[in-house]
Length: 286
Length: 121
Ligand SMILES: C[S@@+](CC[C@H](N)C(=O)[O-])C[C@H]1O[C@@H](n2cnc3c(N)ncnc32)[C@H](O)[C@@H]1O
Image (cartoon, rainbow over all chains, first blue to last red; front, side, top):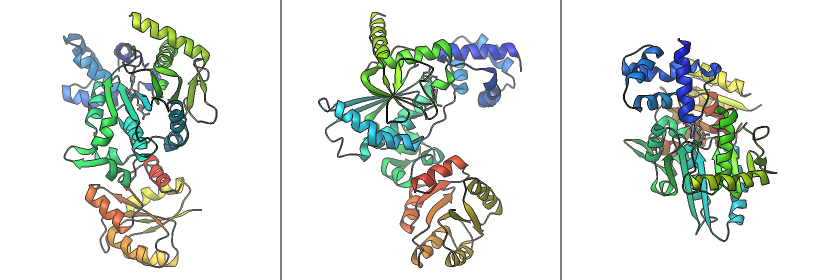
């Protein structure tokens, strides 16, 4: 495979998503793009690069970018942290928001929506605790194709059973010719929107809880710092940030600190809160 | 050590499943059909049964109904392995006494999550 073509691809991905494609991840390119190659009747990356150069719009480039993204996700990924959300984090937020009875939650890099729907199921399964509350869950992803799937909320027989127990499947999803589709009750709680985490925040911020899981690992250096700035700007000063299993803020940012007694949950430091006000001012000005 | 009985008429599937379960630390036994499995259970009731849905001699559903009606037959957790997961199949499995189901072919991670759901592993 041609090095120059690889570089073009890496630059395209970084420009559109902020993600890096280090040489260690380049082995995946062929597999990731194989569907697209087949569809276009080509066999080489060089041919694809030539086609992108000749095309007049950026539709092909966007499809290439989306094919390169890793969209791996499943329901209740890392179940233990969802149990912790249900038993510790959400009850704490309930106390902090008792006057407003409203929670705003952001699933950043939500892929095909399983993370946001898992959250919605948590709330529905604790019905009495949340009676009278409005829960607003927004999922965003830079990839249009995954947002389309998330909006539809229908999953294949294989996808639906990944992480979900059979009783949950029957309770919260309905079988249809399109697959297993989320019930209206779940769908009413979630919204999905195309958005890059490097861009100014979705309008509904500040959020009480942000899930940013299995996304930061693809960012390095300056872009990682930008992501933390965005997260700090979008999070309420007393809100919580949740990262993926094995991810940490330590050594990456001074805006967040681990929350004692909760695994994978972070809260903002004074520096983060200061940064937050600054970012929000910039976004309003821009 | 937690014991697991794999019930499947396909030797290949049994081999793959055994590999995964042993790597997870289970003591594994195999049965090629439901009748063999019932015999086995009468001698030593396993903690977990990984059960194929479609088998000659005795189907998975017949097996689990029979198992649940025998002495101590309510003890093992039973996970169905199936390629069909329409709602009707799942309802039938729950009704017959299954604890979970997993779609074939499965990998270690997927199975592990199912086992966590039912409090094993
Ligand atoms: C590996 S998935 C993780 C999905 C889910 N959060 C989970 O943990 O199961 C990462 C997602 O981040 C998305 N992503 C990558 N770069 C992004 C960016 N700059 N802005 C928003 N989403 C992005 C990808 O499209 C992908 O769907």
